[in-house]
Length: 150
Image (tube, rainbow, N blue to C red; front, side, top):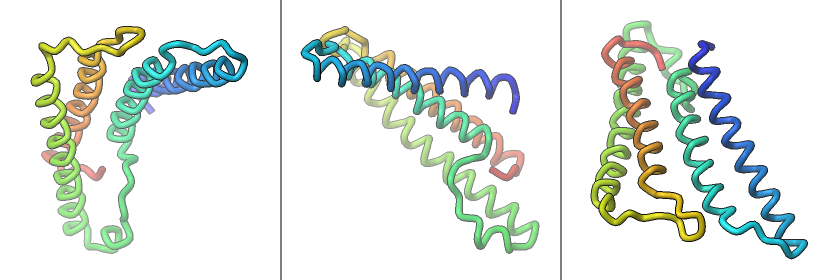
C-alpha cells in the first residue's frame, strides 16, 4: 500500500470514527435530555467524505466486488478482455453517476443550499462526492487503456 493510499485511508477512517463519535454523543445527549443540535448534519458531511474516500481506495486497490468464478477459468487472452470490459462497464456506471451528480450540482448551484442548523453548504458535499467519482472514473479509464486487471 502506497503512502497516498495510507493517507487517504486514515482520512476516511478518521471521518468515519468522528461520525460514530458524533452520533454516540447525540444518542447519549437525547437520552439524558441534552440533545446535540445539528448532529445529523455533521454525520452527513462526514459520511460523504468517508464513503467517497472508501470508493477511491477500493478503486485504487482493485477491491470492488467482482465475481471471478468464470473469468478466472478463461484463457489469458479472454481473461484480459473480460477484465477490460468489466473495468469499462464499471467506469461507465461511475461516469453516469458523476454526470447526474454534476447536473444536480450545476442546477442547484445558485440555490445556495445549506443545512438547517449548522448551515453546512450542500455544494461542498457535492463537490467532495463529484471529485471522488471523477478520480475513480479516471483510475478505471487508465486501467481500460492499459488492459490492467481491476
